[in-house]
Length: 267
View 1 (cartoon, rainbow, N blue to C red):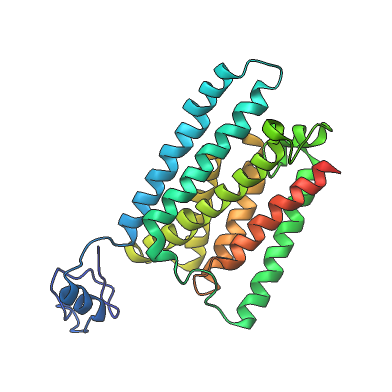
View 2: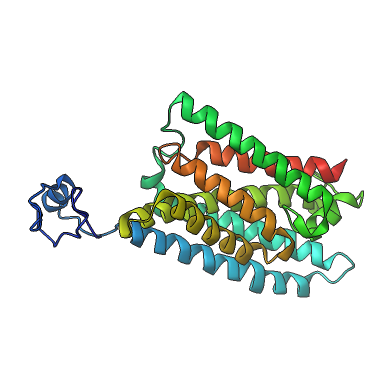
């Protein structure tokens, strides 16, 4: 873990309680020296989270789906493999992230004040409206992949119907993926950027939004969701940066977006 001087931002050496450059005392280094815990910094936590995400994305969208496609040989093979594959990988990913990073998530719901909440909520709702309209206007600007929207529009979508409850599996899967992405590519990524760089807030929003969009594509493998994913991730990264690093509103907005998509294409 790199510990920086809070005055001159120089990276301190291990056991360097007072900065050799400016003499500033580092409480963070003092605590590390007292506890002996110099590892497990923000960058290390992000690397672990991102690695888990990418491994499970590969298995969920690759090996699991191919296996399910071989097992299920009928007219709905694509829907079967996508819905079950995504369900398995997303639930496993969520469980793994919570097990590995549960200590980092204790205070992640809301740390901001009422003014910040109001401002962030307005921007978030505006983003919800924009991406919802885009998803209606064109097949190339969907929020969720066309394989799912086509199923929801088909008239055969089922939520509670035994093994055919694909709509339920898709809804649960997308929400689980959204939660995992917020933890890994919002909280852990932004913490790592803050720890390792001195980028401005604007650059953090741009960089964080781009990385989160790439991660979203890596999981869903859906070209038609790239535009709306960019919009969502830029807005949610800004909200995270301007709410004292809180994820509660982000998670609420992500769930709202997904539910609205289901309502749009089911009606």
